[in-house]
Amino acid sequence: MTDHQNHPRPNSTADNKRTDGHEGGSFHGIQADARILTITGWLTGIYFIIELGLGFYSQSVAVISDAFHTFSAVGGILIAFIANKVAARRAHETATYGFKRAEIVGALLNGVFLFLMAGYVMYMGYMRLGKEFELPTGIMLLAALGGLITEIISFKLIYQSQKNNINMQGAFWHIMQTFVGSILIIVAAVIIWLTGYTDIDAILGMTFGLVLFWASYKIIKDAMDIFMQAVPPGVDMPAIKQALEDIPGVISVRHLHAWVLTSNQNIFSAHIQIEDFNEAERILRSAEDLLKESYGFYFSTLQLERQHRDLGADDMDFANG
Image 1 (cartoon, rainbow, N blue to C red):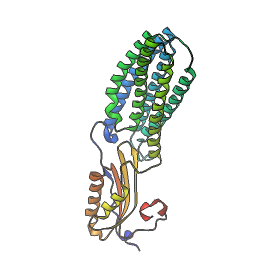
Image 2 (cartoon, helix red, strand yellow):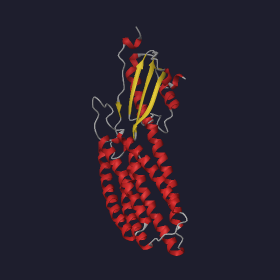
Image 3 (cartoon, rainbow, N blue to C red):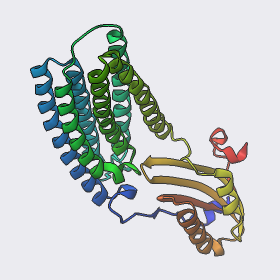
Image 4 (cartoon, rainbow, N blue to C red):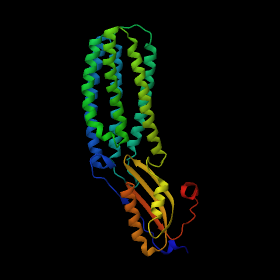
């Protein structure tokens, strides 16, 4: 009979919940983000209707195009809002982690949406190059000014949340898209007014399309890393292994795993071989504190044992490589 059968194994279920309004995915943070998304969604949606009306009134292709960019931002915010609502649902017996990863699904959809919009902007710019068309600069400037006011308000609301939440980042970049679109309309309108060079509209639009490609790539990559349960950025697994093994009474550590549940919620698990089960409680608490305070893990599960068992899963144990 092995030692782990003679002794109950202490397990850590350290739930290191944050208490601030945005980080850690707390329900307070989720509700605050939902309010932000609601306000920015209404602001952007109302302005979309106004800008579309200005576009059709003036027959300005540039303004109509920017209106549809604004509509894409509304769609992006809506995706983020739905994901936020789903993520707020609590864990239960058939979803033991809850639905927190809905935020990552929302971020992935937003990233794909941004990628498609980037392709559309590039195509539209290419098709316009070298073609003569009339652009009423007064209407363009009016539409851009209204857009800037709306987008600046939205930026102020969403900026802090998007720093630590990949789902909110997706919505943020949709607003950024419309903000830059408004700036480009102003620049294009001024150049067209001064020089009559209408190709500048297409050139600036295609340049912005490249920025959107970069933003969409980053969001999609981050979301896919989470779905693939990659080690969180900035987490040094060999260093954590060494730090755990430096705890007095620890012989070795195997089957270390670290992954991201959702934004700002990193999870950790490991098997820790110890010398004496009389020291189990001290070792367990030391390991928990180390993982929480030094490495910022939201939740950890640690299995203490006298001897490491062959679990038939060495292909998932980097420490055994």
